[in-house]
Image 1 (cartoon, rainbow, N blue to C red):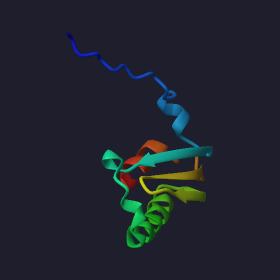
Image 2 (image 1 turned 60 degrees about the horizontal axis):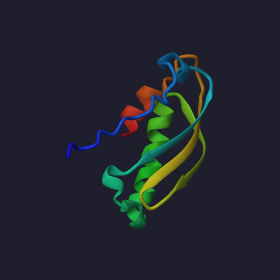
Image 3 (image 1 turned 90 degrees about the vertical axis):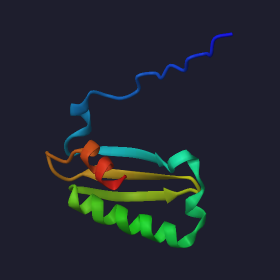
Image 4 (image 1 turned 90 degrees about the horizontal axis):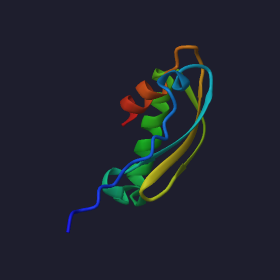
Length: 92
């Protein structure tokens, strides 16, 4: 019996849609969905790092929610060159 192949849906917008003075809702999961944010020290560290990286990449974090194995946040690009892909890569 052949293994079934999982096909991902294309759910991303064109790259240009991730640049500029726009609002973005982001979800980032921990590797292998490990529940590392159950450790208080890790939560404080990731929030501080999110603040640093968002400032460096010209984003403002309006709100965030840290779950045991993932993070949600609402980000606003504050400049025409604010690039969500660059921000996400530097944050990860």
